[in-house]
Length: 199
Image (tube, rainbow, N blue to C red; front, side, top):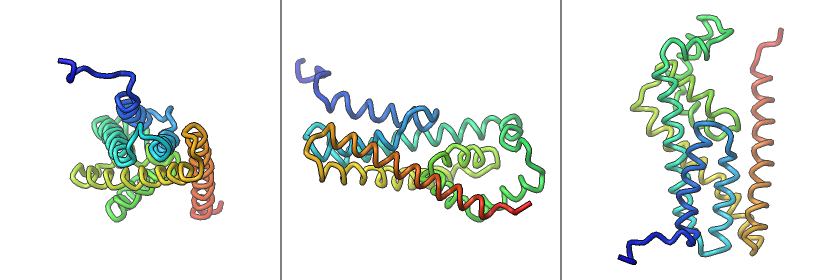
């Protein structure tokens, strides 16, 4: 009987479910800094025996993927109401152009949207409301989540390789995530401005 008991004082018992739930929640409602969590968990895995880096990656990928699928499903099932919300202020020609872009570069848009800060939810909502098929969304979103988890975990691996203290390594990993996210957002904003037609 004792072998079936759950030891809630064990960091592994708490760590993996907490990471999975936080990443899942942050993938649906952007109130949790999921990239920072993955980086910090990777830093802990590098500096202690409480977490395993491969398991941190697996848990992060699964949590992010399920969250992305839920976001896409809500947009897809939302029907005309969701389409009106997304297409507010856009002409029918612009909507048709968006459909064409998803037909040609759908998987690239989903991958880039996952990696660029603040790009994931608009991309998934657009995919759902513009009829991007499930059979393409599921593997593409999974690949995007794998790339995302590896990218942010590498920041934790870097900080964990420099600092032996797990708390310091986690804080440095979170700070690196913030810096990288800010730089990515800045680059994306510059690209959007250059692509938008000048009035």
